[in-house]
Length: 154
Image (cartoon, rainbow, N blue to C red):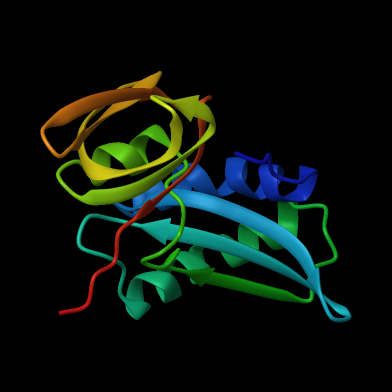
């Protein structure tokens, strides 16, 4: 997975203990230009999803800390849920989604293919196991190009 910019990494390090103290998980931070404006975004999550009041609480807690300690010229600061279709990036992401169906893309072929769809069975520090049609596949995070939740509408 791609690394964060210097500002996004600094924001992540400042935000992580505060977000955890609020009982939530810090998923990612990004600092990017959109049009002529610079955006600093913080993505939070928890099992069952995030509510708007939780985003507001995190925003109010982080705003003064970022103003005082973050060396950036962001025009906008946002806190949000990462969304249903966002890629799983951290070990905590994979652990939180054990038992759920995901779509995995690999950098290099395994069993003559790069794409797998199945249920996350286990997740550890170095790898995760996927159950696909009765077969188990173990992938290291390094060999995984992307992993997203399967979203099906009935």
